Length: 134
Image (cartoon, rainbow, N blue to C red; front, top):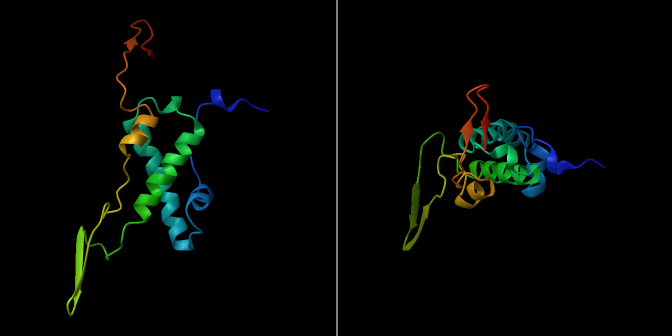
């Protein structure tokens, strides 16, 4: 059995099947959107967390799936960027404020911590070969 703790994770870190296992069976339209968002979520991690290679593959998979689930859970109002909605019928009123109205991909504070994005780390560059060391 291979030791997965020493393997470098490979983007996009998750699949549509991983997302379905954690959430629900996706329609073909949702699956198409999810596949694109999975790649985008991996790019967000790589772009914002310089030490992503040190994260375990399972951690990356879990976080990518959570990011995509948040994005796909956003209400679709035909392209309108709605952050709040209310509806009144007679004397009954319903008001909603959406946590992610635009379906953005983002990392929560705890996800950033799990990926080592919040830790301050010291590093140096070897001037003879240009390689960075932590």
